Length: 521
Image (cartoon, rainbow, N blue to C red):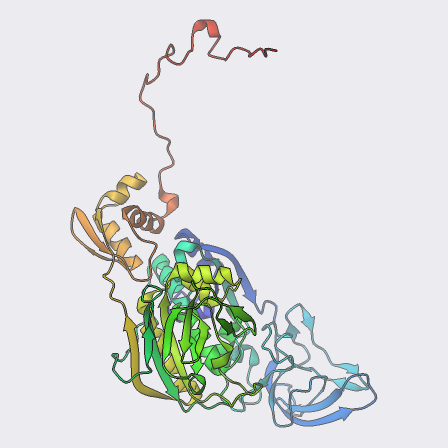
């Protein structure tokens, strides 16, 4: 899990001077495996600004297309005059807002920018691509074209969030909740003793009878399914820069607004989501086991022959998704490059699937996805409704959509898991006298509800399926109190527990050394 420090600060008020290395040390102290801290934009130096393309001259006589451009960069160049720049990219036009690096700047990789003569012209800077700025692949393979609302001369380093630190966390199987910003933020808040702004605390409407129809035929494989519908989406709406940058820093490529929003919410809350083009879904959505030999073309373009153990999402025609793993191509969100009409209305799926079933399907089809990785490790079933609401809110805000009033939520009732534990059990396990107050406080920080005095009744939070018995709870107390604080003394054996005679040690054996063994032939 890649965790941008700037994003983490949205949920925990870390000290302004705290660095990624500092946060790494704190998280390691509470048991998370933070492998690296990547310095994004290390060595980057401006001026790097928003520019507006004024003119484009096509240069002839070269092996590849070359353009000589003038770009308005405001007063960033010290003169206010248009900047003359040679560029080979073709994906921009006169009037577009672009990112311009001026002479004197230094790009990632210690690439110093200076005026230079090339293709018979002098280029005073560069019009930049995402790759040149160390932003990763955005799928355009060209220079960055910004939304028109950005002002000429604006500092692009801040606008594009080019300087940051990213913590790379190796999430172990028992820490599936840390495959989300919410989970890592919870651990960070606990490690620092600071409050958490929980992004899952949203106003969620109650289920009603007029949501999108859903039928679950396998409640063991799928014990929760939330469906929400948003209409009136603006097909031309693009993901805002802040969302694209957070996705990129987290290791994901921006695709389209609707898809980016579902990926963003998954990273934020840990709940995988899927968006279906509602006009391409035929009838009610169903959840069932596949019929042996059924076929489904998944979003990666692969035709998959399904097994009877595979859990699938269906409509009246058959499978439209491999549940918890990957959606089907027959209901995917359509963009400008596709053969279908642009998507203007979607059905949002936020469901909870059986971890073992998803793991087996992913391995059977050799298809590991961001969704399957999370379901395999355990997703918080209580997060589905909040994740669906967050997705709806972002689609309304960023794509101009309208949320339909219908709310579908099908659940199989599950009683909260409770564990009875003596209050001094962590003391006995660790050999440390923590005391009841500390034990209760630490379990509450984990998210447990705790009652009782000498014997504690602990209700386990829905996002911690790994907590099943008293030793698991004791381990939580011990890790939060610090493994380094455990006693390191070896136990002392009782005196004269073994007599010299009993051990075969006699004076004749010269200090109990074993006699040489003579091989016999």
